[in-house]
Length: 224
Image 1: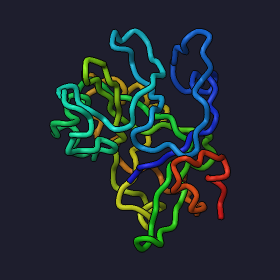
Image 2: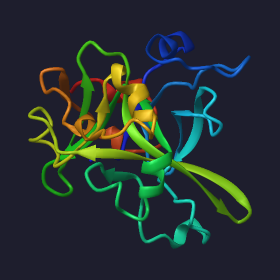
Image 3: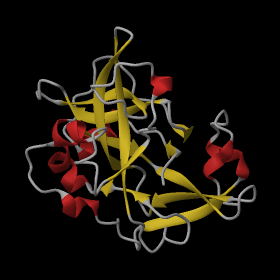
């Protein structure tokens, strides 16, 4: 499961070294965040609607499909994560899977394991990678007359590093597959849903303070 993630400072040049991104003029890149939670606004990489270039755009974490018109609090689904194996057929996600794919830039994510009320938090990242991208879907809904853009994180079965901590892990996309994932015309992409290499994945225990969504200190990712 992935219900919190962190993102260190990533500059425009860092993004452009991995993907052909067109940054907005005179705008600084998003600030780092160390405790991003569902229902927060986070940047995603995606093609513009006109398919002219790749942009970094703000979206709500918790996908709301384009056919949803009621208030968000009336949803019976969360939209925070979606199983990559079934997202293409579920009504909430299938439209976005077919047309609107995105990448979520992160430096790692958090999982909790253990008994209820006695869980231990772990941070999960990639070895020798300052940042990387999770596979996601985005969509636009018209809520109370305003356009709401939102996204979900795709999940898959865990690799050996994560298996002892969680039943799933986010789909991590390699840089050479970024454009392939973003292009809905690229054909079969199920091979991208394989768990990321356990050898390249690192998990370490972190303090309980990560459970407080208001805490956004870089100390949250320090090993304890």
